[in-house]
Length: 170
Image (tube, rainbow, N blue to C red; front, side, top):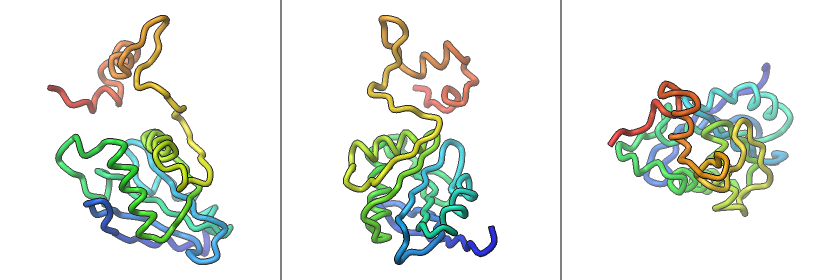
């Protein structure tokens, strides 16, 4: 869109360096919108939405989440819990001086958005998620039983399904 400038910044948050794309006014904005990308995406997945909202007066922020794009990728798998990633986002908001956000998530970003609402509801004005519904339990109900999601996806879609392919083998 004409007139929208995407500003890129790297900030130190929660022990990592995070790449962030921003657009729209930072002062006197209608509000801040935090976009959380899915797998295997980057901030760029939200380019059209950022441009659309920025031109309408919203302060738009789209980070590359932990382990993606220009953001640090810790080697330890244990560094990728929802607590770590929500901690990254809270630290990002603190660094940028943003008290509350309209939160928008897709796929992996939608899961993180649900956790953000659960762990830090005071930082969220509203939530819009696409593709991932809230799951109260980490297990999936299959009739009277519950099954681990990875086992379910393996049975339903096969081992080449993207969620199954990226699991650590022990």
